[in-house]
Image (cartoon, rainbow, N blue to C red; front, side, top):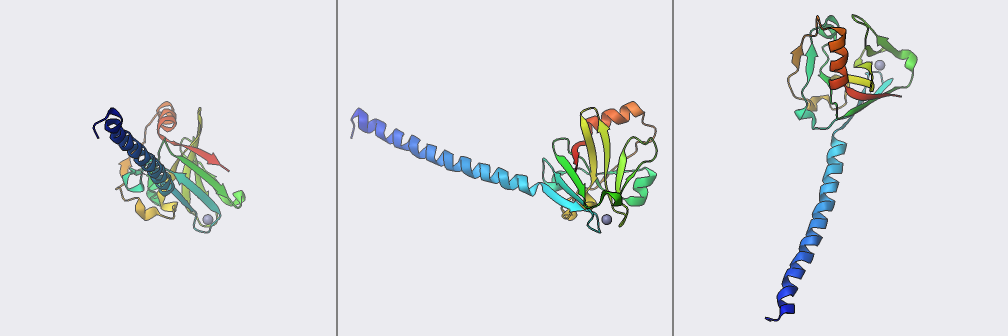
Length: 177
Ligand SMILES: [Zn+2]
């Protein structure tokens, strides 16, 4: 067939196939993104089960940089800290009376610790944009998936202004339920 109609029929069919394929690919991509989103959600909490956390991160755990801190609190607890400004963190407790909001030093943030089992969960601060947190990945169920070597940070001598702007920029949005 060399008619104009015959000539055009093939590309139309091809376009239609391509569209169907693209739609299928689109659906698959959406499904993949959904799976990926779920795999970036991490549940956890304290050892005795009183405190519960849900952490959503914008990248896979093995790609998350972790931080350790040289302050006397962190030297004794050895948390591995993660923060993701594009993620978010939720924490709730069966009994808030069993949750310590420990403050020390500049007293500008709360270190959430279970009073019953002693697990350090997260540091929480109030920023102009809302509640912000950094989270101890050791309290997550899948803590072993966070494989980066923690980078040691020394915040000693930091001014209050620098500290609050660093938290506003780097800490992740948090919801306390
Ligand atoms: Zn506990």
